[in-house]
Length: 142
Image (tube, rainbow, N blue to C red; front, side, top):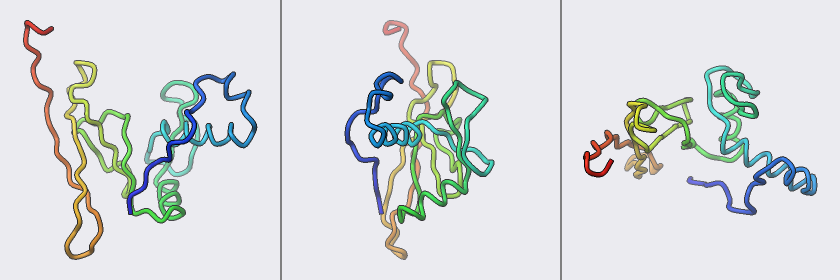
């Protein structure tokens, strides 16, 4: 019921390194980058995001549903995107959680963690969330 991205070889860190890889390995590296850095959005499909930096991709709820079905998963939990409440059900089966409150000292967002517990009726793991605010920094520590 729970799966994680496998830890294989490290993703290529530059385009030159990616170009030097055998094609099958290069394709796997591209897939890892897409899985780690693509962002969910409301529109269907998959494609480049023109809102942010080059090589950033977005995917719709249809892509999430197809991925979960193909991999026999119920939902996915992802991160790396600030959410004002610390987490958000970005798609019906996709949770974005961000644990750094007040990101970069000025975002004003809450942080959150996800706790998975077994539902007694269904036997499935179900998520619950703990949110928190940033602690004020002491003047002597700044």
